[in-house]
Length: 260
Image 1 (cartoon, rainbow, N blue to C red):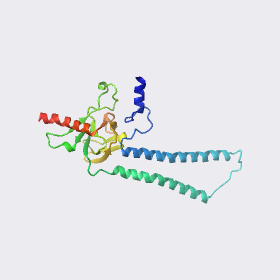
Image 2 (cartoon, one colour):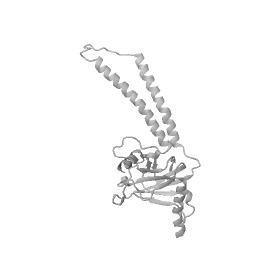
Image 3 (cartoon, rainbow, N blue to C red):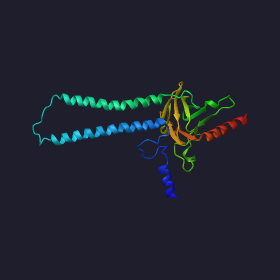
Image 4 (cartoon, rainbow, N blue to C red):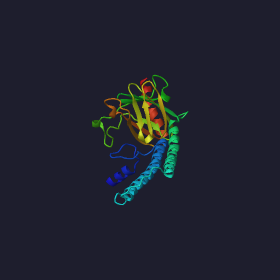
């Protein structure tokens, strides 16, 4: 049983921060996958540059040691080497810049006709979510606050400082627009697995789009220092099937209809 649980946790997607984690969380959106791919591409060039510079450094230390060359040579000009170290870095920068700009422009694109629009409002120190498509009147609206669950109230398996009482439930494989704003100070709505980090500015509406490709639970936090309890503003997005999402929306709206 222990081995089975260990295999489950090691093979399951990484959608939350882990102790001593150095890499990215597993991508759940095309945007995050593009960020990871760009990182790997740039890292490839970094390794090549690192190896080349180390090779030159070691070669210089070895061949130009004072015992082997008691009389140092003086090179005041070298046209060939100057051309080489100007052209090659330019080519490398070009290979980095092209995918970088492509990713930046794709991240700025907003879906014209999203299936769902969710408004995230930052407060000190919690989040409020409004599902605008279901706000038909003041009596019937899908709006709720999301607070962090205190450590003493956590259940077995829940993550410390990351669990909330009300999750943001979204359907998987569906275009979703997120509108982010703030009611008091600067906040930032960030979920690493989704590749989203959108600032919440008082009096301003920022928006971004996500397309969650697989079902799961994705954890994030406020990423803009906003006061004493900044570290206690987690974000939890739960992606479910469209059928389960419809059932969840119905369950959220039925109690309000009954009270009315």
